[in-house]
Length: 138
Ligand code: SF4
Image (cartoon, rainbow, N blue to C red; front, side, top):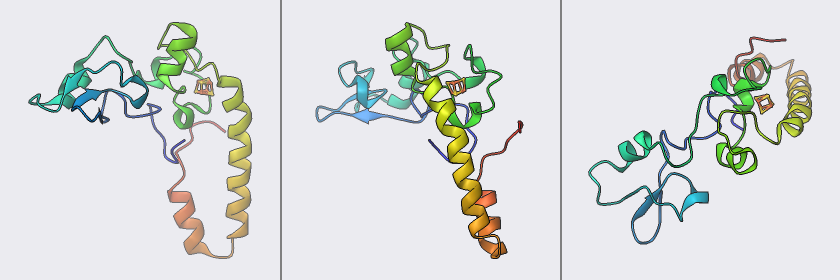
């Protein structure tokens, strides 16, 4: 989980490359057996970004079941590969959704307690608040 608002759970297919010792390039470390490019390609990242066969990392705003979720910009819908392995689809919420929905309120509560602990130190509070994701739901 990252600490700022985001649309994708990870950088797969966008800004993430994984090289194996032979120079083959995969989109994800869980897909080393499915190389998409190699270190000798002119632009392996471009190849990964345009690939439509391997793991697809779509925006949480496009995932069925996530669009109205108050945690969507923290969770981003979960690991796309795991979701695909369980559901056969990339455009649906994570099979771990119930776990995330149970954990996020607790994480938020703990963050609130952390803020309270430092409430008498405005410098620390400002730094903590600035590092929190923007929320458009209560
Ligand atoms: S908690 Fe569930 S519904 Fe909300 S963004 Fe994550 S997977 Fe989607």
